[in-house]
Length: 391
Image 1 (cartoon, rainbow, N blue to C red):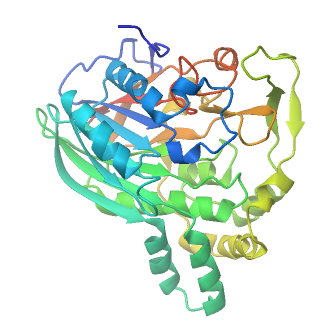
Image 2: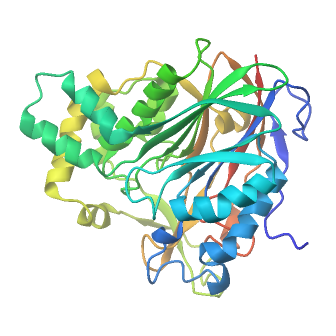
């Protein structure tokens, strides 16, 4: 069988000598997260650099399955999964590979959703829960009487943009150890709504803390749609966020490394780097009321957003930094490709021990694809995976 993905090796955490990433014993847990690019997110005129036969899910599904089979995770978290694709393709095909799964959608289930699959040979599902971000926002706002009804309504309207998270609790069949898993996909707003993004991250951490067993072991993974220098990343990593720092992040618009490309051709100037401010592009898709509501939400951050639960990033713990790229696409600014790190695997600091992470391709390898998806990368995101030892 022809291989349609880039094979990647496992990188051990410093002090761990095994580079193969095998499941040494019953306490090992291998996890994987993957935004698989749902068809609903491919609009006319976008991803035209991708060959038509693999642009849509019908041509990419088997390639994604090949990659899953290669990584061989015990738990698989997928983002941008529609209900029809889950029921008609993913669920039956992954069942044949030894997995069962669950799906949650918080808006139009025919377009988007989250899915968690687990290997039934190794894990027993003991609990599951869908946590819509809008419902979390409603509960938080009910606690604060100093927020006007008008501001509450504006913030709740803003929260309708968000999804939420999907949680699952498992028990290892051979060891009896338990672990809780969270799958998250923060709304993509081109970094225009940092308050909402922070709330989505914090609500997922809060939900996992309440959901998991008393030992507090959990892994949170997915598409954060936030870069490593962003407020949602800092909040998840430290457990709290300074509101003034948040305002500064909002005002200091991100500068991305961009380069030109030509459809089905090599880059005309591969060594040229462009810095393009996105403020005008971002705010066009948002109303003044939504931007105002996000600022109001930021004022409440010190009360309702802090998690007081610092988490570690698996890749940062092994590499000393996040991957160069986990998302590469050309739709956001016609004529350009952006390269961002948006996806993460977070874990509790005390209860589980990180062993390995799956190597991610270098910036040079990704640039050779002229944008993702491509013949060797079946999504616009790059999958992440890690191996943990449960204590």
